[in-house]
Length: 351
Length: 279
Ligand SMILES: Cc1cc2nc3c(=O)[nH]c(=O)nc-3n(C[C@H](O)[C@H](O)[C@H](O)COP(=O)(O)OP(=O)(O)OC[C@H]3O[C@@H](n4cnc5c(N)ncnc54)[C@H](O)[C@@H]3O)c2cc1C
Ligand code: SF4
Ligand code: SF4
Ligand code: SF4
Ligand code: FES
Image 1 (cartoon, rainbow over the protein chains, first blue to last red):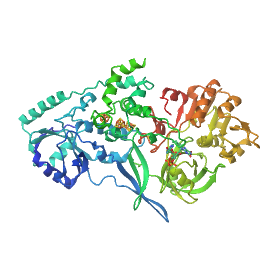
Image 2: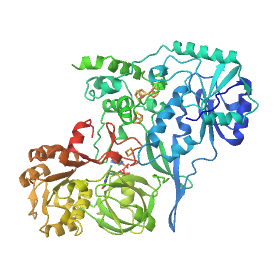
Image 3: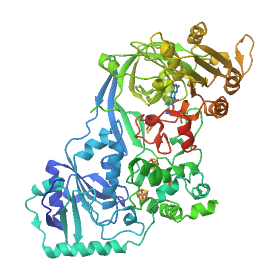
Image 4: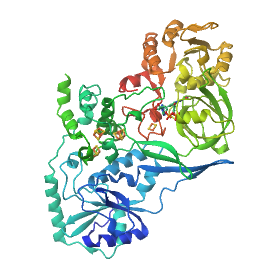
């Protein structure tokens, strides 16, 4: 463990544009932006674009490191043959500002996945390793937020380098890592926080945490799912699902992708987000599909999040951000599924 | 660190049409960069991601044997965008290759043992690699009796006829080639693979079985193989799933918590019995 001075700074809300402006000189700065009623993360070039007054962003920040479409390399086919040009992954270091604690936790899970095994995913890791995360604690959780059930908290610091905590017209900035401290040192104009303010956020954090009413008993679910692959409930729960894939696209941890070639002026090999909720995801050339219906595809999503991933990495692959619940067009609620498994309702119904 | 998504360029040196329907061809590729050739050290049963530039990429089993020096071969059936583009390519075309990927066949476990190879349809490609590897003069002594059972719909659909011919002339391989239904002029075995396995009844004594074929063939062959006494942990199956990245990242080829591309494609029957039935 590196020991460093835990510092608390303070910044007026009206100074956020100035902060971003200054960071912009050295970093690629990504913040939430509001466009057409959507809040999502984008590279900003001026301080005024940042939009921090949201409950949670509709799209998760995963696209900063794992874009919906990403060029793996470009190539040209000419008389000499084929010339491959590697895509530059990173122009400058990144500052990612304004992500919620659940999403920061999501990155820790993605880190595990993309850095595991014999082959590392350099496209994700390059960007991720060179990023400073300035998180934003939640004062107004949504009714669908269940981070506290998934080991997180509305003021959680896990995965953050710095954490902004909102008290009225200013943010307290808590330093969480050495990387965060380094960034703070580049901003000497930030004022020190006062003890009174620190006490204020501490009590705020407790109150907000208590205000999260959505609870799911997730303990033991992973183990229970071991014997539930053939449970009859899978036949029922998928029925209303349209297979639209929204739940996986918006999820901060879902990271399945397809690879294809596209031509513009040059050929590009790109990877694009994909989803296990689509029937063609596993369709084979012979016409055979090991996941032929919504049943198998829904089971894959639940199993991956609460059984397969925990088996491989020791943690659930869900951080309780609630996006899949909030945005599902047919109100499919993953919390209900987890709860039913946890309380043995599935097992009993199957008997 | 190497970027596993970047293919190495190779050139198509030779194209062989394998079947009467003319939709299965073998492509012989040579690396343009000697360094890339050196790095492409593979085992029988592994696969590679093949790039047809201007079309895309797809996983294909390696059909040549590591004993084949200086080139690699892939036998490809025309089914969609990439495989059609490959079929339309001519000798001299640049093709990208990344890999080798997957675990491959358990060669170490097979040493000193009798080997029974069972294959159906055009999935025979990596089994052909294995057969040629075992039959190679530098390897033949390391393995005991070799039995190969291979079936296709009709004689015109049998691939590697040139290999089947050479193998048939050797006395150190028990070769059993079958077609689904009798046709005039065919003097070999007739019947589906499971029935022929039963008929040939290879002994399971000190033996390992290696099986690859369409799901329906596997389904009906497994009971026969078990009945012959092959234990589940000495029966190996090579699976096919839809794949894209080949390295355990794109997320589409999992069976339970295993990824067929990196934890497979070869699994023991015992392992498969413990995995969810979703392949
Ligand atoms: C480990 C492994 C080894 C293989 N070895 C061989 C081989 O030796 N010879 C051979 O001819 N084929 C092999 N295949 C199958 C081959 O990968 C597919 O036929 C090929 O990807 C189809 O690509 P396409 O672009 O031509 O088809 P597309 O235009 O993409 O699709 C045509 C059809 O093929 C299906 N498909 C697409 N991609 C795949 C895929 N990766 N796997 C299975 N089905 C797919 C689609 O769902 C669609 O139904 C292997 C597959 C795997 C996973
Ligand atoms: S968002 Fe809802 S309808 Fe769409 S795939 Fe997910 S569960 Fe199904
Ligand atoms: S599964 Fe749903 S609640 Fe869990 S992290 Fe993904 S989107 Fe959020
Ligand atoms: S739930 Fe589905 S889309 Fe999401 S990561 Fe798992 S397999 Fe991929
Ligand atoms: S092919 Fe991508 S995970 Fe297996």
